[in-house]
Length: 150
Image 1 (spheres, one colour):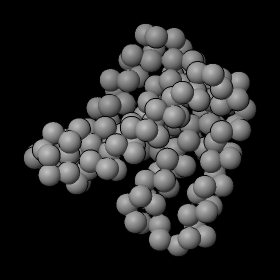
Image 2 (cartoon, helix red, strand yellow):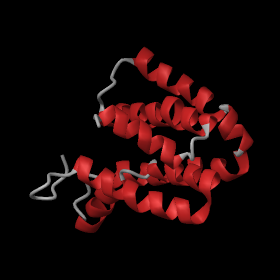
Image 3 (cartoon, one colour):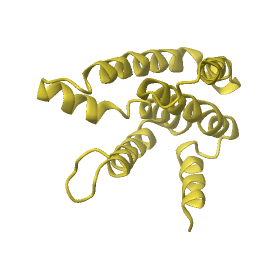
Image 4 (cartoon, one colour):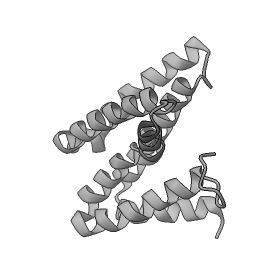
C-alpha cells in the first residue's frame, strides 16, 4: 500500500468513515496548522501568502463538522493554539527541559485529530488513535538512530 493509500485508510479509521469529519481534518485543519507552522518557522515570508493562511481560519472554524461540534472543538482549538504558542517560545530555550518539552509538544495540533476520533468513535477509539498518532508524529520528525529532531 502506498503512503497516500495508507494515509487515506488511516483518516477513514480515525473518523469512522464520517465524511464531514474526514473533510474537516484533511482539507481544513491539517493544511491550516501546517501553514501556521510554516509562517512561524519563517518558511512563508510573503505577506499575501500569510494572509491566505489567516483566511483559511475562516473555513476551519465555520466548517460544518466544526460547527456541529462547536462546544467540544472550540476548547480544543484554543488549547492547541496556547500550547503551540508555548512551543514557539520555548523551542530554542537554553533551559533544557523547556526545549525538550517544546520538541515533544510541537505536535499538539494532533489533539484535534484525537478529539475528532473521540467524537466519531468514543473514548476507546480516541485512546487507540492517540497512541498511534503520537508514535507517528515522533517517528516522522525524529532521526531513527539518534532520536534528534529533523
